[in-house]
Amino acid sequence: MRTLSVALVFALGLCAQTSRYGVGRVPGAEEIRGLGPTVAPDGTGLPEGSATAVEGRELFAQKCAKCHGEKAEGDVGPALVGGQGTLATPKPRKTVGSFWPHAPVVWDYVHRAMPFNQPGVLSHREVYAVVAYVLFLNGIIGEKDVMDAKSLGKVRMPNRDGFVPDPRPDVKSK
Amino acid sequence: MMGRAEEARTLGKPLSGYTERSVYVKAERATRQSKTPEAGSSATPLADMMGIITPSALHYERHHAGVPTIDPEQHRLTVHGMVERPLVLTMAEIQRMPSVSRIAFLECGGNSGGEWGALTGPTAQRACGLASCSEWTGVPLRLVLEECGLKPGAAWLIAEGADACRMQRSVPVEAALGEALLAYGQNGEPLRPSQGFPLRLLTPGWEGNLQVKWLRRLLVTDQPYMTRDETSKYSDLMPDGKARIFTLMMEAKSVVTFPSGGQRLPGRGLYELTGLAWSGQGLIERVEVTLDGGRSWQAAVLQEPRLPKAFTRFRLAWQWDGKPAVIASRAVDETGYVQPGKEELIAARGLNSGYHFNGIKLWKVAADGSVANADA
Image (cartoon, rainbow over all chains, first blue to last red; front, side, top):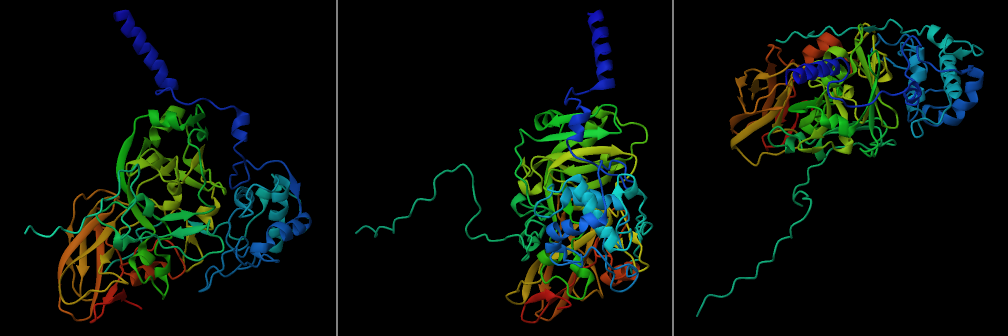
């Protein structure tokens, strides 16, 4: 009996180090990759591929302009260009160029959620292309600058330092 | 002679497997015309609610790419990143783990966004209806993370949904190790598809957008991923051009739901004024009501149950004398935080922060008994 108890404690001890409930299985690296890329603000996690704004121009016209306008000025979907210098004014215009702090996150969002009615349809290279085009339209990169996993993380967005932590409670009640 | 036979009464409907509400009950969520009805919000008809629980079919919605249809047999949650053991979990495995149930409100970070402007919501539903309250059932997220083993330095979870846009938010690990649930039940049944069936994140008291629906992935990291929905959206732009980020906790708020905009009092006399109050910081300590546009305030009765981070219903007997009146409520939570007025909020944050409005909502009762937003 005592031997059994010791064995049981030993077994439970081992379980605690690994699995308490014995649920789930460990996925392989390939299986995790299959869930799709996750992209940190510094670009970690961006996949292979590269493109320039020149390549993005036509793709944008085909896949994006219907909602965002020919020049990304906004239509059904929000404006993606302009607004730089407006954030501290009575009529701020929040766009990729004026507001978004990290270029790799633009890639991440376009990849996961755009085009609105067909997310997932763009290849990784195509996402680099339309992101490059939108950054170019905002005057952030050159038309022939090659955007890839390394260079996109090095793009400095105008509003990079525009976000501050939550200071609440911030309101004085009467 | 015997009395005349009564008119024969018709039998009611037979037993059935699933009950719909009475044909005389019509309350619905409010939506807006949209060219993209898969993205947007629908608001709970707060003035039609009783008690503190929102029927699941009337829980507010905020979707970014429509409501997916997910087979729970096929659904998986993958936890990976800075963990000792990445795990893929089936719904059956998640439901084998110890569960808890708790009542908690959920409020969109953009609820009452229109109240910042000059044209405020004409009804409680339009003004405050992106808030609802349910009993949620699920496994404490902490248990799942312990099962994986967090590596030193793990500080954030990047939560991802299985909707078409793979909605993604960064969640501080301290929340996950606290009250957060992997929720699969709502009000006694599995989550409704529009609330994330079969699995959603639930961090009581924090803004709705964080509570990722159709949860398929938790990536454990040392940093937030500054995703679209936590930078370009749901951040609060201040007059100096800086935007506050991760303003996650929903501060104390309340609204009078009767009498409220769009209703009409049939005449002078005794009424029971009622409404809802809630705080992301815990219990509602008290609710005060004004009947004279804020000159004087009196304590309302708080109806049990009064639970932390849940709707709390308040009531006040009101003898209406038939004269115009401006009524409102203000909530005080257990931390002593007092729900502010709109002017105080604007003084602190300006007019362009857009989100996280929790100001006092005023209703104007006219001499004819009609009720409208006070600035109408």
